[in-house]
Amino acid sequence: GTRVAGTTRRMTDVTQLTVAAGTVAYYAMALNQAPVVSSAAFSIAENSAAGTAVGTVSATDADSGDTIAYAITAGNDSGAFAINPVTGQLTVAAAPALDFETTSVYTLTVQATDAAGVTGSASAAVNVTNVDEAPTDIALSSSAVAENLPADTTVGTFTATDPDSGDTCTYALVSGTGSDDNPSFTIEGGALKTATVFDFETKAVCSIRVRT
Image (cartoon, rainbow, N blue to C red; front, side, top):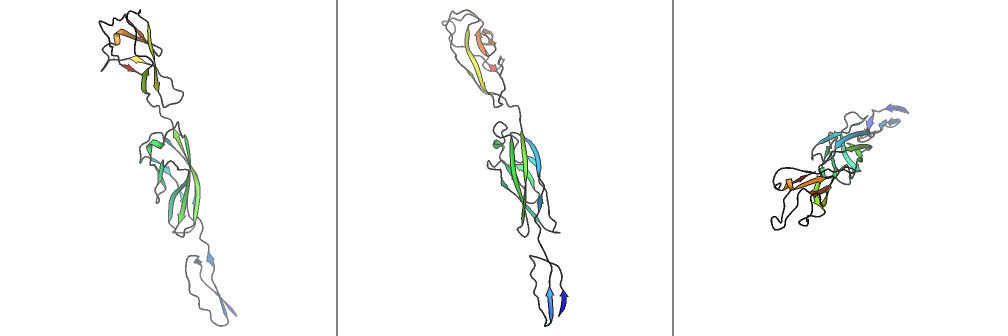
């Protein structure tokens, strides 16, 4: 018989064939190729606000005219990030999850899906950079001292909570609300010491203001 060449079709196309007697019709079917996602690495400072741009993941598709939809499929258990399904742009979704001391690197899996549902994926590493955070919760181990003790008597020791692991805190008496009795004390290292002899009958409560 006579071989009749057909036209090239995508696998998703539907073509009706009519085969005449004595002829053979054939069609070359073009396979739908998966999108290729490029691996990427980004950096973002801890505590960045929700909506802050992190970077953009890109993908290519050999099938001309194909559309691509992006999604995060793994590595985002804390919900720290979101991705724009059209552009592939990563943004911060949950600021509290970006804590350098807890997680310094997120390894996300980003998947690209074309119009036919064929997928490709790659990793996107997001490095969370450290920010020097202020100490909180200043505490004094003892807030009482007996009267008539000599100056330079230790009252107690200051401590504070610092989110930055390994940081050390220093303490100083500063002016402001509550600093009325600062002149009656000194701080050496982290120890609060008296700078005078106290008399309970004259003054039973002192107020100081401390900064770390």
